[in-house]
Length: 264
Image 1 (cartoon, helix red, strand yellow):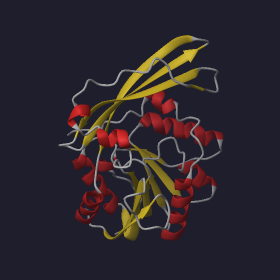
Image 2 (cartoon, rainbow, N blue to C red; image 1 turned 60 degrees about the vertical axis):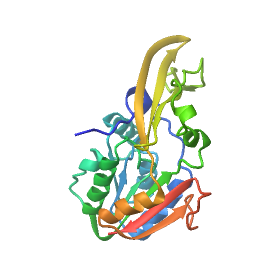
Image 3 (cartoon, one colour; image 1 turned 90 degrees about the horizontal axis):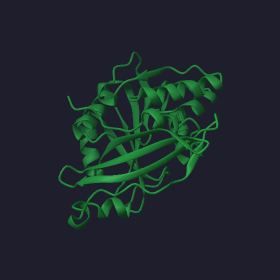
């Protein structure tokens, strides 16, 4: 079976060790958990950027992620805060957990991996893991309001050679004094399959000396609103509502993030 292709490993995962505080998505999903019910599942929890804040607030939330490297970072961050989260290393499309949830949310991970079929299966697994009347929610960053991503579909752009790496980029200083330099580039856009392929290069520096370099590749699915609604309906969900930019406003074409909230 084809596996999701993401880049959240090794040094990329390490770069999330000092992840910034949650933005509007943190408050949005916290309110969702409080109103839709617990226990909840943070699907694609990564380094625990949202999960650890929710646990600190006393919410009953589990975490699941495809990357064991990201979960290791999450566990390390949790230990420093005196937390002991329940973490599971599983792919969304193979979700098989011991609990059933009142709320499952996926922040920024729907569309990662480059396999539409696996996204469909993930929605089915989420439906299976919800209690009757439970809520599944996720946000999806639309491509039509991202000019480079949208223009990359056109022949004059998608038929050119891949972008080169920048000569240099900003560095992120780590607690041990080393520095991470991160650069990303586009490799290919396939409008027939609605998949874009990108690469990330991470370099680890210490006192001006390059210690390690990693290059990882990630694929991104592209969906329309109606495609996602159709997939959710096929997975068994009903009462599908769509909002914009982590607000209570009905989604419009001008919103950058579509927020899907649906019931089992």
